[in-house]
Length: 131
Length: 131
Image (cartoon, rainbow over all chains, first blue to last red; front, side, top):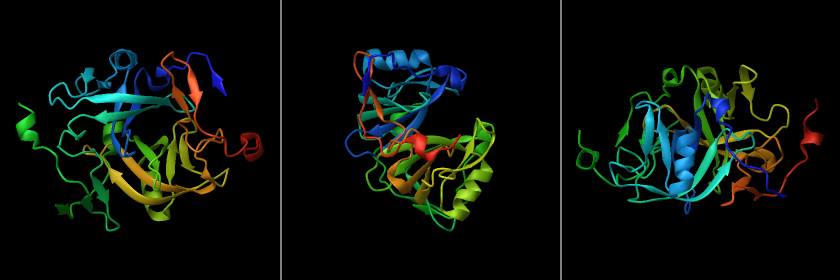
């Protein structure tokens, strides 16, 4: 079953902003979760690179704008309710996390409630981000 | 680097409710995105099964409570900001989506803006959910 109906996110459900999950298109590793508004979505589609909406900075966030670690979009999925976006991406530089790890989910919770770091750091944030 | 500091989600960041991504622990397929409040988180930890907070029903949602398609939790990750949860799960019944598909992200967006269904339906929702 394919359809030619417009297949667009329902931004209204999230008050204009809905979550977007980025996943490595090769390994399936979940890299990060961020948010998109309609402008971020449109810019992602037109540029082929992941563009999010930063809730803390209240503006578009071209992922990699500071670090150079952009995300090239390989595939886009919406969920059944069209209120979540899934991007399969190529993470340029090998690290999605601003802390220098491949994935933002680099800490696994242990049964005793502590955190285990399960990835190697790819870059030193102090050398990539300035101020 | 491991730490014995408490490693807990920061529910305050999301006004008490933060997103949780469920991923198949074997294939890496992203199955769904839902939300958790602190009670859902605690119940997930104690039961070993994914329990979410349903925003539409405004109550705990024991995933699979109607369909029997529970999610056995194999691993739990928090992201760098501790405001997103990642669960690696075994999806009992093989379908996470209430529409009967393995993943809620069963529609891939095509370059022309249309949707392509990329998975086979595992069950018929009309036979699983009653009213």
